[in-house]
Amino acid sequence: MMKTILLAGTMAIAAPAFAQTAPAGAPAAPVTAAPMAPATTTAPQADTTATAAAQTTPVTPAADATATASTQPADSTQVASAVDTQFGQYDKNADGKLDRTEFTSWMVALKTASDPSTKAESAETKKWVGAAFAQADTNKNKSLDKAEVTGFLNQGQS
Image (cartoon, rainbow, N blue to C red; front, side):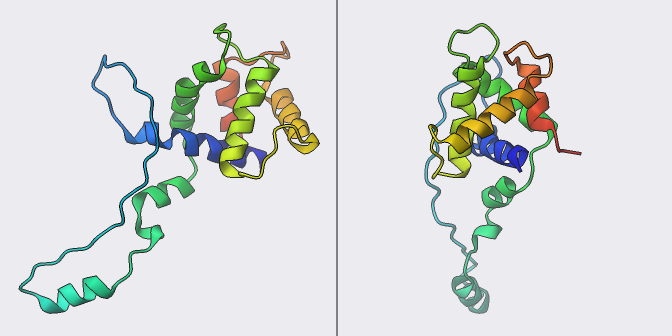
């Protein structure tokens, strides 16, 4: 379950970045999510039956490609891309590793994205982050590199 929450949170944060493409060599710009405009359906005016049906058929969120994509699990390439994109944002001292504090801020942000009622200072959240850090720190050096974070987030995928 923790892996699912982490993965869902990562993808929720990274989804706007995946949706955009930049020309090669272009600097990356900060990405902000904008509300989507409601979907509209138009039909040729000559066919009044099709127009009436299109106007009375409600557009459901499940039909929205963005909603469908966010419910599907990310593959390992998407997870690796999300880690590459976000790792530097949480590596405050730019040493290429995340210490427990840096990792905690990232995991709390991910968990909050999937569960807004998350409290960073709660005992439950601290226990959850501690367990996640211990599981991700495969070489037990008390820091996480990109490979460890990517491997941790990819666990549970087949």
